[in-house]
Image 1 (cartoon, rainbow, N blue to C red):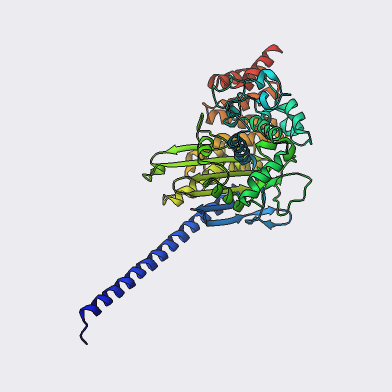
Image 2: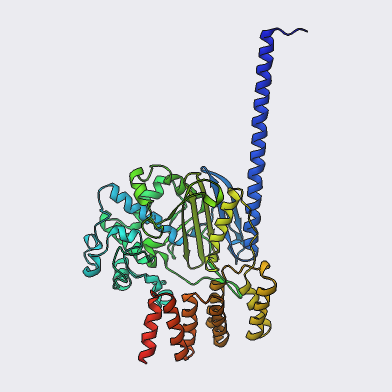
Length: 502
């Protein structure tokens, strides 16, 4: 059969279409396999973190608004063995700050607040010498100089569990003398966002919760997000746990609504927080002009409720990428949110075992996931050597356990994660002190100083233990070393004065 020229053209067109669709099919298959491979790698990573008791919660990864990975690890309620799922509601701690910042920026957009007005302009009952010196902008960016009320020694025992009116709470615990000249530096302080919550109420004549619900949650469709009240029945709310050297335990009680308010009182789910991410990429909540203000870093890369970094050649990709992130931590819970603007990646980790206390390990997880997304080589997580040290201590004595630790570091270092050893040894010292094992705790703090000789915090913890043990001269010596390493360590300076006056 002879094919005419016209028929030949049709055959060529048909073959072209077949080849084109074959290419699309192969591309789809390759992309699907590649996506599956990345999901499997992420799952393997997080599963290993979970196996080493470094994460217990829910993970969601999205690209361009579509979920590419979502999975729960461990239990939302360990006593009932109820698994973590996409509908599990977790306390998100300081991730709440970006919602408070958004409410303030919406008021600014409406012309109801000036970012350069002061606390006293909106809260006339607040102490004037401080209130007239601190602006809204300074509070949003943590450059106010207001002391952090959650750093108070009695925070856990006396402040976190009460049911105190927010104004009364602020007058009692958020009205201290400034620690530095406002605007001169950045120092993270929950006091800033607690007061911002009160300013939102003063301007709107509504409760913070009502404004949050109407202006953000209802608009975005976040039906599984709200303020965590201890006496309120909240379906699918996770229980909070602490993981210490003896295993899991129920976290201490806290009244989030009363004691954290605008700085950290919210709960949410991974999928609701994906809706939040999507909304931030539109003008649904805020204009582009005002989002630019909200997302512009002031000092130390802190913008309004978010840490924002403009990174050239991001993790060696050759791309210039803007990242936005924030962590949260509250009794029994840790959280970490990360976004990339240009490539539209979003990662959220919600944990109900306070994993963030174990060396900042949520940061490590999110960095590993980002590496997988960008096709970078990732190493599997490793166990923490401080737990191996404690296991040895349980079977022997402190001298033998420390000798065992030194052996691990010398001969088996590749097997363990020594990157967070300062935090881990400090945690072990604190744990032993809480069990009244004073001599053992002092030995661990001393080991931490030896391992981290440039750490002001390590010397401060060691000095505090010596002080409690009545070793005044040694305590002063180590507080002075801590102050030498960090001239801004007000706690060390105060303890030196206290000890020297005795």
